[in-house]
Image (cartoon, rainbow, N blue to C red; front, side):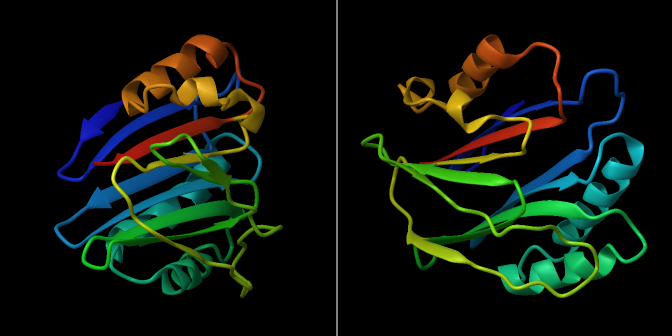
Length: 198
């Protein structure tokens, strides 16, 4: 699935684990005049119960997209009481200050790729959200034209995201090429989101 908004181009690849109807990953994104938010959650395990937990987190982010990352994660944590845990990544962009910030807990990967091809990989905090308070680490950066953000669940092996995938920095082609190279039966739920700031 690909979509162009006013400032960001977005393309998404998602497939469930082999043999499962439900994908345990859920994602949400929204662009407004002032900001952009994108989140990806992977429910622990796979199948329907994993999907219920990951979707509960996305429902919170959809309801409160203007909250800062720390407040969003706190609310997401509260929504997981009596549910399976999730790993979670959140990206927020503030257009007025030309900045971005992101945080990742567990094995949700977040990468940035500059228009010159320089890759930077976030090191997520270990663990997962399960209804209990968590320490957070939020990374901040300056937004620049042509910057590509890549967010992915653990069904994506980072080695599969070689620089050749980003040769033309077209998010639709990034996803199409990934599907061509890695689109067979999956050992895990897989979600890959490519976003480019224009």
